[in-house]
Image (cartoon, rainbow, N blue to C red; front, side, top):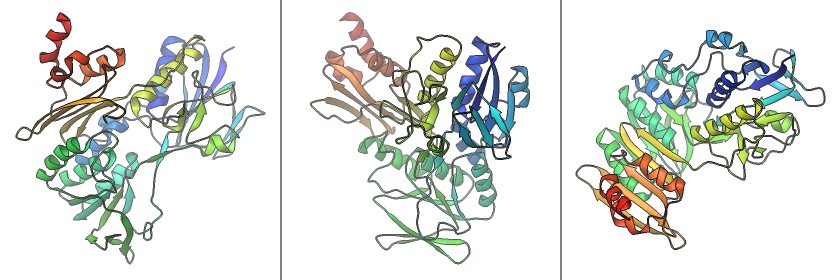
Length: 407
């Protein structure tokens, strides 16, 4: 008799897990999947393309109900889990129905952070996180003219570009001194900002939001320095927080995320967790690539490979921000004796930077031309000693590879 596997969550991590597990061990588990959203899995990375009008909602769907049927998976869309009873090994959903499990996987993802500011409940103050958010913003864009996006990270810039493409005047308000500070150094961010400004997006940096103003609907954003930005639409894109409420309610170990070991197991050996909701070795990644790697490790273990282990992720991020190619990987700041080399061409909008530590490539940032991102990432991941190539690395593979092969 097949053992019972229950998966809570139907995002990109869960989809990768189900795909791998049903390919590698199709008869090992009887699988039930609960998804809080009333639809099958979709690609969150492409939500900005839906907002901008480059793609439709149907274009970003990864699966449909037939996909689950073909793989013998019981799929319950639009049904959230309210409680885990670990002693009886059952989950209780919002309809009150209990579903038993032999093993439970939590892939609950993360939630958009809503700043606790005065006026946040005004009509027209929205988040940008899921397909419902996107459809709501598309509807708003048909009658609104001035949008303020709170947050200059990737999500905020994607929201800004999507709304700009739909004809709105857009201002991005960012607390920090440069955009995408987690992925870019100040110079790389400046190159990106200049390109986005040329496309009609305005920026207020080092700007702290104080409140949202209006009677019934938002009319303006007040900053702590006294500035008042007119807005009939506000998008909150200040980050996400791991969704750990279900795990915490079940008494699992929760820090910033649900604590897991190298096998992706929680404090309960019958419960695993993957994706944006987890914390592994003190890190919460909040990115798709690590979530996929975690899902593949767990799929291997559930298929019978007890040696499969997740050792953490070296993150390389290849993005297109409002049509501008951006690549960032590793440690992008030259600290603790590290060396850096940069190459900048303001006319073409191309900026390149590499960081080396102890003779090995530790980080890289590319803006405008990211063709060498994968090559640099491979050098970084292998830990190859490339200190003698420092000056040529920054000019790219065509310059550095002949010298590397000759060494």
